[in-house]
Image (cartoon, rainbow, N blue to C red; front, side):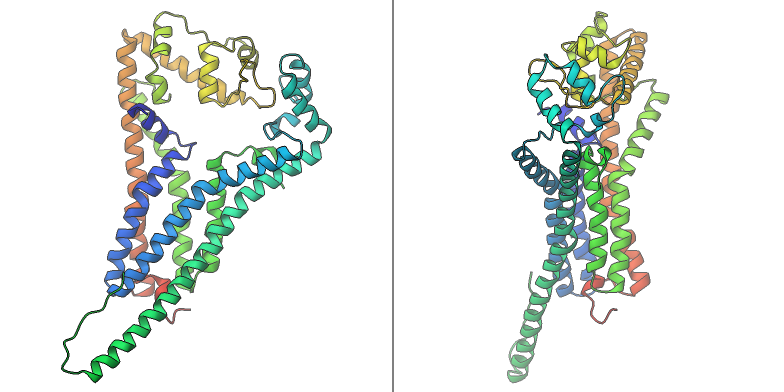
Amino acid sequence: MSIVDIISAIGNNSSVYPLIVRDCGIEVPSKVILTYRQNLKDSKQMAYNATRERLIDEYGTSLIWLGGIPAVSKLCDWSIKKLGYNPNVNLSLLKENSKQGLEYNIKKFQKLAPNEVKDMEKVLKNKSTYQKLLAGKFILSTAIPVALMGYFLPKFNFALTDKIRQKQEARKEEVRILKKSLEPAREQEISFKGVTAALANMSTVHKMAITDGGLTIGRVGTARNKYEKMELGFKMSMMMFLNFVAPIWIAKGFDSFSNKIFKTNVNLDPNLLNDKEFLKDIENCKFKMPEGEIIDFLDKNPNSKFAKLAEKYCGIKYLKTRIRDPRAFVDEDRVQKFKQEIEKFIKQAKESGNINKFAKKALMVKSANILANVGISSFLLAWALPKITFILRKKVTGTDAEPGLVRNKT
């Protein structure tokens, strides 16, 4: 994987890659260190207990959060196939229009894609059953991770803490008795380390956002006292905002700023800005763009550069025969917007007088925007939010220790 591929991946806020970088690579390690330092102000034992809980909580949650939804979805897809349905048939096709729909696509692709048409005919005859199956898939793929993250993981974590604290208290008592019976002995310090098509078609990232909401409810519900409930409610609500909303706002702000200041359209993916074939086609005026209906163009020109780019960046699906998959829904607005961004880029590139030089400039600016976005959002998540949380904790509870580990709080 090249550097451009990596930057492209972490700059795609519709994928899980920015979340992996921010969550596992930056946010969690930083939170663990800050948690240890903050609770060390109370005592070493408090710091060890808080850090252990944070490690289990953060990495356990990340594992379930990032892997749970895809795993459950695959299991559900397997079950749906066993029942004789193909989960690739998009529910949005149940709504017929003049360009696409189940019945429309069945007629259009009857001879072009007979196997895929059979999948659609099965759904057409059993609409209600298929909708219920996909609704069940959505519910399971979000409810199971929520249950694991929001209830079972914290319950396990708290139970482990209680068990370890009992041992710590018992050892403290043993040391006290030993010190009393052996007064002259040298003192030693002891330490221990109903679902619609929109829901069914939700991306993994959107499902992760929903599970985050469920996780917040679960964590607040299982909190050990009112101060822990308050802190978790504030912290996790802000985490949702900083993970799913702020990066999109920051990206739009940077790209808009770059367009105004550098007169460079950087709304395209870095991989596309680095695509030599794409740039060569522009230079030679060979890049063919849709002029009429988007769907007609995609069907009549499946091997065109634009169709292949729409497949890569707009979710258009083609079969191995390069026939468009009739089971998949075409988001015309998304493709149209993509087309407009390409047109802006081509216009600016040609006006610059040197297309390749302009593309390199755009790639550098876009890459800088992405890295700055990751840096800012990671800083807010990994340092600013914990620090604000600690300040509020001190003001509300009067202590630096984790609220759930402080006894006699109600």
